[in-house]
Image (cartoon, rainbow, N blue to C red; front, side, top):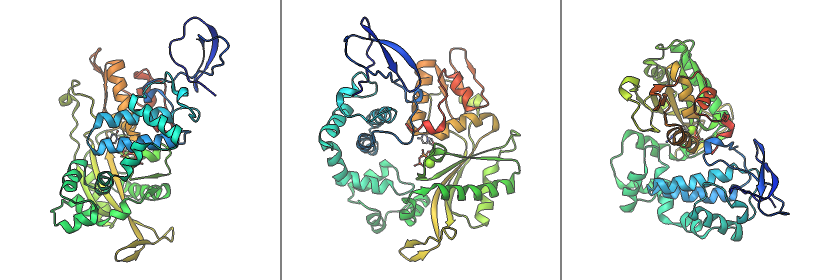
Length: 398
Ligand code: DCT
Ligand code: MG
């Protein structure tokens, strides 16, 4: 069995340290003990994290606890479980025993306890209790409604509302997003396939080119990382002549609406101004691009598929689509910020602040020591500014 061993190794016999990316020589303190040693860096943005990995059972268990913490608005706890899961996703082999985890970063006491339980008993008691808990099930079902966050869901849960049907019967006044979320609940909780994402991409391209020829459309989010399904489809739109992209979204939305492609949309304008933003702003995961949250009406005729609804079958489905417009000079930052995963993005920003004294957002990178913005024309240049090895999108699945 392989032991991953990263504690500082002083005197002893030289051993080869095998890492996916480097080959180095370290020292074992235990002569005669055969070690295949992997050094694992502690920030997820320093590691390659493929979509398919070797520790699904463990990461599934940790993800449930992360989700439960997030639904309970315990962000810190959620992040701790996410970091532990991401570490396991990046390992080159299946973990078979807890002793293999000695010295690895990101594994807190709680996560380690859960991992050990799953390794020894096949399941974790805490994970089982969570998945069977009424509150967890209700919070998942309610936040599964488009337009409903953890706060609202929790308020409703405390009123005895546990399901979308309960909500429908409650007579609560819902906003426009929530009404659409309830109306298309089943379909919006159906995974969006890659081929559906491609079909939506063709519609978006027609719309964008109809109102601004020469604009560039990029599929971002999970699909750019190689996922075969997603909960939505995300696109980034830009134009090489900076300024031409201003005010683009309302025109695209009008075109889509006129063609009957939109079931719901809410557009927010671009409110980012470098001069006003001030570099002192904390790194935020919110950006200020022109953005459209929408629900598309996608025909399923091509696939010969029918969607079953309460009112009988039909030949189209509802799909969540996010459109983002970025000025050309900010495009690499927007691309990096919108490719994800969420944890990978969080780790990039944390690395920037704590290791480089820089502030990274989806708009810009600011060097606090030299008090200047660092420009970039590609994602590769941003990684270089940050002193990080370039990680391609398919390896950002932390
Ligand atoms: N993002 C982020 N922080 C957030 C929300 C989003 O960094 N709080 C970035 C990372 C991913 C990208 O935006 C798109 O977000 P989602 O669509 O929610 O994520 P996804 O990875 O595309 O997941 P899915 O495949 O389920 O759509
Ligand atoms: Mg997405």
